[in-house]
Image 1 (cartoon, rainbow, N blue to C red):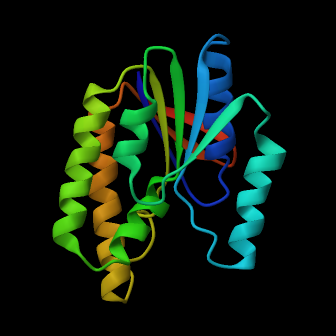
Image 2 (cartoon, rainbow, N blue to C red; image 1 turned 120 degrees about the horizontal axis):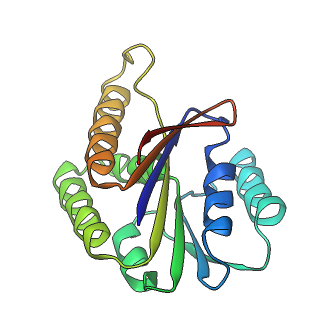
Length: 173
């Protein structure tokens, strides 16, 4: 099963996605694939909060700031429940490399892996397309690519949830 949780910053999407994984089945291995990089003190603090305040010892953490497809293919099985948090951080990591040809290949490999993966996979991503069009070229490209990514994943997903103020709105499934 593939699920996509979308929402704005601090909307509660990660917490709800974690709860979804925990309530799905008790006999599966829970894997948290983290895409964040701790580039400053504030991000280091956010990562620590997720690790220590929100996840118990029942989670295995895999760090994958760039190699997300490999992390999923190496972890997914019929007995796993995988939470990927967050796709927009993963996208940012790739766009900062300024290598679009590589990004498109990486994205397509990610799609292929998702379509073949076994188990339960929940993807978390920031919905950024509801605001104004950004002024800078990199920011506009990020909004464009995240929008395309979300549309493609929503088409693939069995269930899509939009989270606002900690409340789920099921868009699909």
